[in-house]
Amino acid sequence: MFEAIKNNRAGFDEFLLRNQTAILNLVEATPSRRSAQLRRLAPKDDLTQMALILAAWQHCRKAVLAYDWLMDHESRFTPGRPYRKETASQGLLFDDLRKRAITRWPFQWGASPFIEEAKRREPCGANDYNEVMDEYNPETGLY
Image (cartoon, rainbow, N blue to C red; front, top):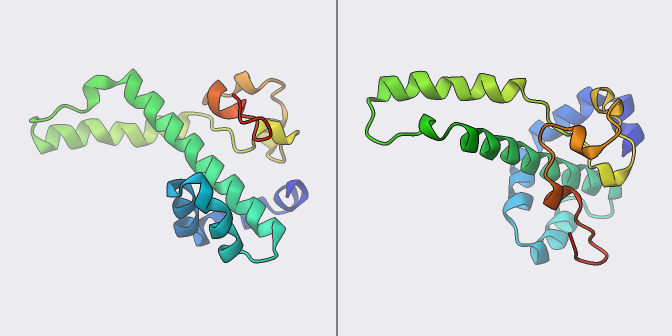
């Protein structure tokens, strides 16, 4: 997976677009259903399954960024305000989220193939670091 992304990052980004529905389904699925979904989406193709897992993980990281933004800007969502004022306010969300750095590679998987992340030494150096999510150990089931 590392080499596939490092050698063709644009190809990975295209993969994300083509498989957006599958990625959302993985995120929404209960843990017990994810293995069956992966086998159905990419039978006997470990690389595609790993890419889908990484894409679902990235989607969750984006959600963490959005929730972080919401916690920092509680006043942005106020019921009852005129829709034009709400639209003017909410439009800032998109630009603000784009400015925030996102982790695109789980630190548990080792060095990142994404150049902008390769310079980081510690997971907490990422703006969207979430200790509970990033420190989960599937072998022990502990955080």
